[in-house]
Structure formats: C-alpha cells, structure tokens
Length: 478
Image (cartoon, rainbow, N blue to C red; front, top):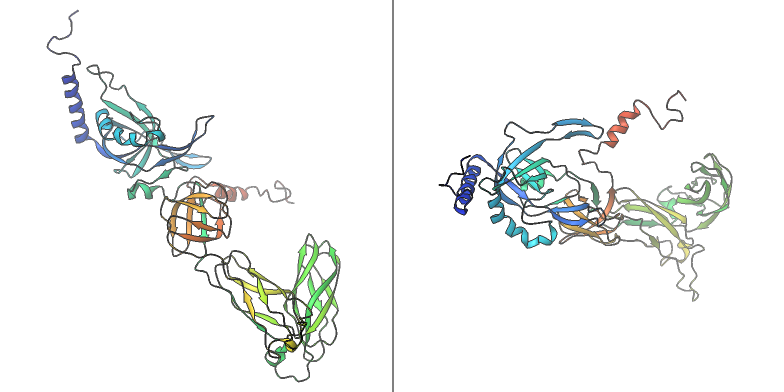
C-alpha cells in the first residue's frame, strides 16, 4: 500500500487556508444573502431548562448556500387538528470562518444571554429574503464534510419554518419585524380617547312650566324616593313598577327596579313625575317573582337631572353631585328633606348614557339660592389623560396592576394597542405607561384573534352545526 503523496502535507495551515478561502469564495458566488439572528434567553425554567421567553434584537448578514436546491423538504402544508401547518424544511451551509470572524465577537458582548457564542445554536433564526421566510435552526451539523485536510470548514444548519409563539423580535429590519407582527398570543387593549367631562343640567320641579305647558294650580309634588318594604323573591328579570296616575294633567314617574339575587334591592328614578297631592300606591308586575312591596315618598321642589352630553373617557361610572338647598336666612342651615343620591351608567365606549336617582332631594323651590332656580350639578371628570405614542417592541406597564407587556402594534387614531408576553392581567381603567406615552384602558380583549393557529372559535362554530352541546340532549330532539 502506497503512502500518502509526499508533495502534500495533508493538513498544513497553508493548505487549510486555501480550502477555507475556496469555500468562502464559492459561498459568495453560489449562495444567498441571509440574516442570522442569535437567540437571547430572557427567561428559562430552572428545573426543566425550558426557555420560556426569547429575544431576537440583533441581526447579521451572512452568505449561505442552500443545500436543498430542489425545493423545501419536510412534509409541506399539512392539515392537523389545530389547523393548517407548514412544515417546510431547509438546509443552509455557512462558513465557519465567516461566523467566527463576524458574528462571534459581537455575540460575546452579550454572552451571558446565550448558550455559546462560538458556534450557531439550535433555536437561532435565519431570515431568507429570497422567499420572505423565517426559519429556526433545529440542528447544527459541524462535521460535514468530515475533516477534509484534517479540518472543518462549514456549519450545516438544518432548519424548519419558524412558528412564532412569544418571542421578542426587533431587528430594525422592516421585512423581518413586520413578518411576525400579527402572530403570537396577543391581547388587544382599546384605550380611551381624549377625556371629556360629562355635562349635566338640573331642572327644578316647576317643570310644568316647560314640559307640561301652562297649567296653573297643578300640584308640584313628585316621587322623591321608593321605600322597599319587602324585596320579594324569585325574580328572574326586573319587574315593571307601576304608580297610580295623579289627577288632572300630572305625570307618573319613570323608574326601574334593580335586582339582587332574585330580590328587589332598589328602585331608581329617571323622572320623578309631577302633580301628586298624596303618595301614590306602588305595585310590581312580572319578572317571575312574588312578594315585593314598597311605598312612595313624595316631595315638593324635586330636581329633574337631565343629561346634556355624555362625555368620553370614563372607565368607571362617575359620581354625580347636586348641592343641598340651604335657607340662607336659617342659622341652622335647613337642608332638603332628602340627601340627593344619583348613579350614572356607561356604555362600552366610556360615555355616560344616563343619570338615575336612588333618592332625590326636595324643597329646592323654597331654599335654593334664588327661589325656584335649579340647583347646580357637577359630575366627576375622567381620571387620567392620553398622550404620546407607543413604540413597537417596547415594554409597557399598567400603573395599577403592575402588569407588563410587549407592544406588537399601536394605532393612535383608533387607540388600539396590541401587546404580547403579558405578565398578568391588566385592569380596565388603569393607565398604561410606555417610554413616551401614557394612555388609559377602556376595554380589554383576551381572546387571541390574530394567531393563525388559534382556530378554537371556528372549530366550535362548525362543530355546533353537527352537535350543539348547549342543548339539554344534543343527541335527541329535546
């Protein structure tokens, strides 16, 4: 058997240098420019060593040869129980020397966040501009070809199409960052618009001059309070509350019952009525319950609070304040026979839609500052303010809950903020603070409607066409 050729050293540094240069040249000619993104580990479970939060905020352009030149490997697009999944696979070949010279030194700057900076790692990402696709390294083959001239020259990176979960990707390359903008477990926070206070006006009970027309001699007493004697039981819906109509041209009150565990808790007044000379009988009708009983208390000089504008920016119902009438000539400060108590109701947009009274003050016509004048009404202004814009991938914090999240997108015009990697539960009405923005939450949507693999609602809707499990017997006619 002949020995090795004596004219070659079979692994001298100069020979290895020549082979490496030839490989680098071939990669630059036949390869593709790709973007290499090393994974930084933000959070790792100590026991099972599972990386729960990763970050990709550095990118390096490097040439890579695509070994799978005849197309993607893997099983392609498959239909699974979770929806359609793409399982495309690809193999990249990159220069070991190029990686060591241009990527390793920069990764060493944050080597406490990576497993190793000396070689590519499973979990790193590669962006292929040719197909606008993002791939995750599943295995790094470091010994193919196997020791040519006693050395290794390339890394073979076996990759699969990346399936986004909760990774932070912020490479400053628009094509990369925007490709995953609507993927992952996303919460949608609708922030309030610029806050505007509610405007309300109170009109004294001499409404007969404005609402009913000129009817001299009409009694000016209205219903100021409903005293619940017995709340009854078994009510499924609020019953209708009826009053005996006052004589002449008087008006009955407009009220609604409020239930608490099947019993009538209170009756709220939206209009106190007018024209009563004695307290009318109160009866309850419908609602499925029995046993409720109440009496009405009437008073003179009752203010009717009407809503002028509903404001905007409320996350909780504001308080309404109406000044008690005080007789300036009475040193004891004679007050109304009732302390006014009002509540407000909001719609989903943070606008006050109605003002109702649990009990209404009286004698405003006698003891207000200026007989017969309507008392002043004030309403809480929205808490907080809106300012600035959130930036992609910045961390925002709820000032009440302390919960943090990563910004996926922010639309200033619609006030829609999408966040991911949320550390807990945000609270409706709290302020969300970023680096240069502060906004208040109006509503929260927890369902992830942006994840292409979240098909639960679709599956349930289609399944209900076959079997509806909301029925008592989904397998029969009952």
